[in-house]
Image 1 (cartoon, helix red, strand yellow):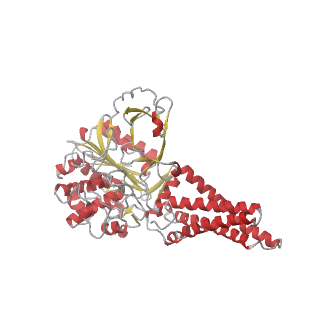
Image 2 (cartoon, helix red, strand yellow):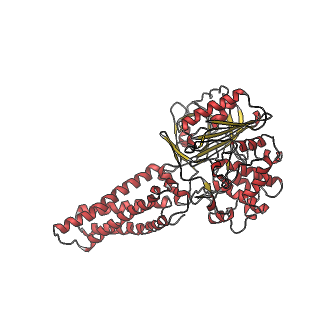
Image 3 (cartoon, one colour):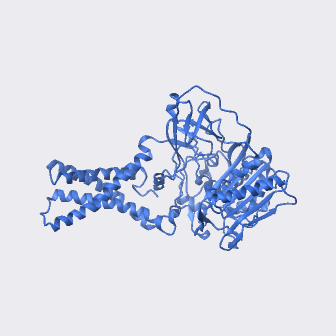
Length: 590
């Protein structure tokens, strides 16, 4: 099912239209997206907006490029940055002033608007409590930020790390500067001038205008019960159509009523991890493709995925969005298709083997974009945070993840077997996409922590089962009670084991509820808060078990097998509590 609307008289070149249609068919097949919206803008030519597939599979409602609204997730940040630069252009906000000068009712660690927009604030990236079940549940931005004050995990200006809270705070500064809500300001200053009549941060009057969200697999698509409403509105709360976003893209290509100076101010790079890498502007991430500079921002939220992509040199802009498939959909390939095949890349210069010199770069590097300060940090253990292994190779190349690289400038490496650059600095690496990968010390390696967790749980399961079974066996055989010291060691071991297992079960239980894995995005249920009282008791139990085990060895109490069991249980408890402490599961860090 294809629908199309030309935003003005005329049409894109037939070649462009054929490329877009062919790309859409291929992409929807590859990522099983139920619906896709696309717009392509060329400076000085009519813009094209097209819809493919369905906004609602059950109702067989096709995607209308002018009326079907998709959640554009983090592409919202390009709107927010544009709005902020309008305020800067009007001298309502200052890029290099501490933002606390504008706030009222709460304070954040000292930070500037420049640092917020370039993701160099050093703020944590917590998702806990950021989502709303319905649009009516979205709370005012100032109240949400006051209840979720961003925590600093690195000095401002030292860590280039993506965080939603940066842009939500920037959006709140607009509210403070103009006395309007963030949505009101954007509607008045961006949507209205550009005639973006089907873009908003709230639900439309006609629910059919919202594309349904679908969880997709190779076997089909299932309607998701949730639409991605969020309290972090300026960071990812906008919904829009292909037609509306074409107008916004055109404005950034110099066509439209918005102040050209303010929009142009969002395009220069304001921060680079390394001089040889693409950088971050106030609204976009920079990319080099086909020998040309491009500006882009993508977004993913649940089932939805979206992309905005500008190539100022060509006067080309692209927007694309899907309502299923999310990150699995390669939306940027449309822009690459329209730009054309990159020029043949010169082979990286041959270098002498620096195998020994590069050993200092070896190790495992973890993306800095994960919650550091709350119990969400434990999501790293589940493999939800990307890690990259770096190894020097005997042939003089550096293995970074799955790619092989050679050094083309000091600490700057070019991929030998594909496109891409990476750079290293002070125990970190980056590919220029607004996220830093930091080297993980041995004691923080996932392998170590997973081993501790698995070994501890195995011991706890054995103790939780064996101790009561052994007690029943002794009673059946009518054996005399053990001495008090042994009984205490058994009791502490069993309490530690069962308490630890109950804690893990209580923490995992919401994953099997109606929200599934998305429960972390909402406020903590009371049951989860309750189980967080257990780790304190577990710490006491671990210490008590260790001392009880030592006492049995000192006095030779009980059997040797029993003493060994108490010792292993105590050690498992100490390891487990240490695991909980490292991953912020020991204490109420919500």
